[in-house]
Length: 153
Image: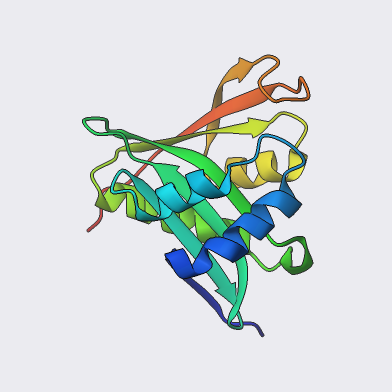
């Protein structure tokens, strides 16, 4: 049984995050410069997932000032480590982190053709509220989804 740890990303994770970003997404990638900026930005929450000590994924949430809504910018799990619940663990961790920072909901965009991710988000309680046509570089549409967050106890 593998041991999963979710923790705040650090600049030491930058190489692994960038490598995964480039492997996971054929287009619409975040640049190394953007990833570096998000790791240290006070208005972002970036978490890294480790499985048995190895980098396994990350999630990035934007936290705009004076907004109660957090926005999932990116999430990726190493394809070699899929099926271990890492995507779910990352989502639950960013939800807790956003709620702890006073956000009352989390929104995201997901490729309409990414049935696995859409199913995960729906299992976690996200509801579709919009479709953005021609959203991605390759012309694919995005589903917009949203979930209310519970305030931390």
